[in-house]
Amino acid sequence: MKFIKFLFSFLFHLTTRRDWHVYRQEKRRWKNFFLKKHGFSVLLVLHDLTVTGAPIACLQLAKAIQNKGGSVSLVAFAGGALKEGFEAINITPIYGNNYIKNKFIIRNLCENFDFIILNTIICYTWAMHIGKNKKAYWWIHESGFIDTYIQSLNEESNTCIDSIKHFKNIFSVSEYAREYLSKYTKNIKILNLGIGDAYEQTAKTIGGKVIFSVIGTYDTNKGQQIMLEAILALEKTYRRQAEFRFIGKQQGAVYSEFAAKAKNENSVYLFDEIADQKSKWLMYAETDVVCVPSFAESCSLVVLEACMMGKPVVLTHTNGAKYMISNFDNGIIINPGNVNELAYCLRWCIDNKEKLLCMGEKSRKKYLEYASLEHLSNQIMNIFHKNT
Image (cartoon, rainbow, N blue to C red; front, side, top):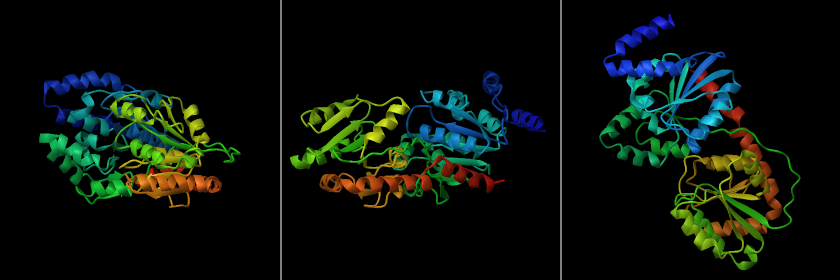
């Protein structure tokens, strides 16, 4: 029956020789794509497979679905290094330009899955074709970037806006991100991010220097410069009691400018991007306080990772992950770009270092309650059950 439905749909939508050519080309790649290995099948759609926020969040979502017995397939518009991450959990992505806009491919791929999840605003090219499908979901990760992206589309900006307005099931990653999206539609629910658990209990006491870590790509939005200014605003007695680590890819103009300003400060240490997971978790384990001084983020994975590893977090109120932090309980929430306020927080952490371990334990509890892979699994299954 499904084959007849697929064939009818194919004949109905096949209008050009180009569609036929593309279909024949792509069919070879679909050989085992539709095979159900478990009780239900899910198609994830991504703009690319780079090792960045949204693709990483999608990888975690795939794991969460698999944990509940789902079979996951993945389509992306472009490749990237995260392809290996998906292959490690037995998902072989297919990707290429043919998957961006071809209506025939989009509709006929979707016919073969129980659920479809589009990731990020960039997947509007799919949303405009399957928006009325009750089992299609659009997980939009962006916040402030949405307006900029839509404006950059020029003649297609109205198409993107219409896709948002008419899509049946739209989800945002946080309350903060939903505020930006609500400009275009009020039909928005929340699907919080979740990450796997790499925590190992360690008997650590903070007796020496307090180690602060800032993790992420060097970017004016990430606030590394604000953090450096706050460090330099500290009295030398405080700087001697702390070690400030910046971890991120050491390239680009922003990094070069930052490194030049930081080179004469003995309490500041610059580390390159950490590639392997084991070394990354070790870095978190050595850290006493994770600082995320960004100007705006939909939902920082660094905050979730810090909480998972049982660390207190200093972050701005313009970070969508602020729901993970209770002020002066398991972290501190500050205003973005405020050097004096951030410097005060650093002093407070140094003066109250005996409280940091207890604050970290509370962060760990927040992770288990709101950001674990199990929590993500339960969220997505509840969403699926409402449409079955």
